[in-house]
Length: 222
Image 1 (cartoon, rainbow, N blue to C red):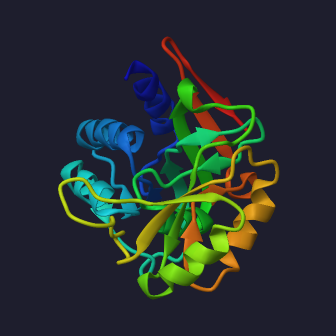
Image 2 (cartoon, rainbow, N blue to C red):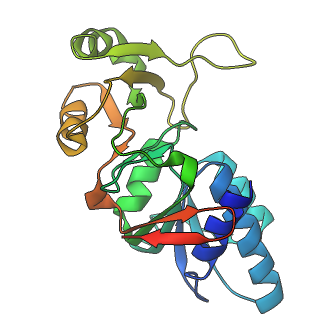
């Protein structure tokens, strides 16, 4: 936990009064939002935010962030998000919380994208399963196409029967490709399959910096 806190503390220093943030999802982002809420209360900051999920929306409201959307703000100042894995070139895998489609949209809409993680998320190369969001209508076809190149698992809910449904109303396939040598190419290929909405590969072209939290400090990689 302290590693995540240290990463979030360094990210907080990037937030200025009047900024419009892209807000990612996950446990480290929630710590970031809680710390930002403390700054908002103590310094009377005015901060706006576009959340990527219901989880981050609720946390943003709780911490005094003025929730807005991409209708009002077409470009965001700063996106802060977490990741499930980060390789040595700052390519990321995201989507453990099923929010990667909206996360990729707000990252693409932001002037600067900062990923905050603890050091356990670092790896020389990406090798975790990649979440792929799929239109339910296209599930059978997409499953057939992806089965040609990877092992697939339809993500199922806990506390409910059947598959997880994303905030966008779609299914999630967790796709195991083994070691991913060319994440940029794989990301583009996955999105070329009809019925695929988005995938959890965030190539380094989308990422400006990664903040890595450690027990006694945090480092910014770029």
